Image (cartoon, rainbow, N blue to C red):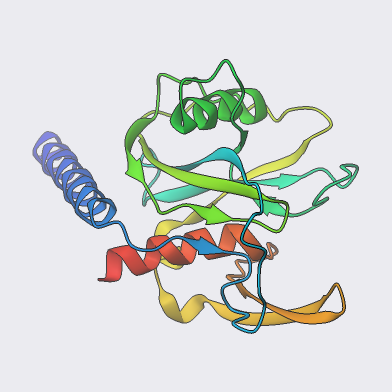
Length: 214
């Protein structure tokens, strides 16, 4: 009886993973317009000749817990840029990287110790432009196995995860604002417990929620 229940639970989990994979692939195949740190500020005019540097971040969805969760990091408070903010593992594309996916996987290995062969890459969300002049490509991937988390000393203060269900609920997203370079800048937030997820990370997660809702 116990063995039968375990088999049924395993089959149910496998079906849930299959359904999630199919939903993600279908959603990511319908690429919409890109987003930016400025798209909630329609009065802001950006220079047309600005130069954006390519970057890749990993939206890693873990499947080895009771329910799917998205892995995020809290940046060190000692960093010069974006100290203490919540971010995906990732960074700029180096010359040694084949593409943005390779960059995201390399950075995830360096920042949190995620072996690059573990993620099952599903696809990409639309590009996101940041205030720091990066064109960020979110690389969506599934993680079927746990791994030994190893935060990069001096850069990553904490590695944590948030339930995917929380991030896919549009009602959990709040538009906030603050003064930026003499103007009022609006942005998305998606708080979770003690974590204040905002800015580019929240915007890209909102794109994921929108893609799976459509």
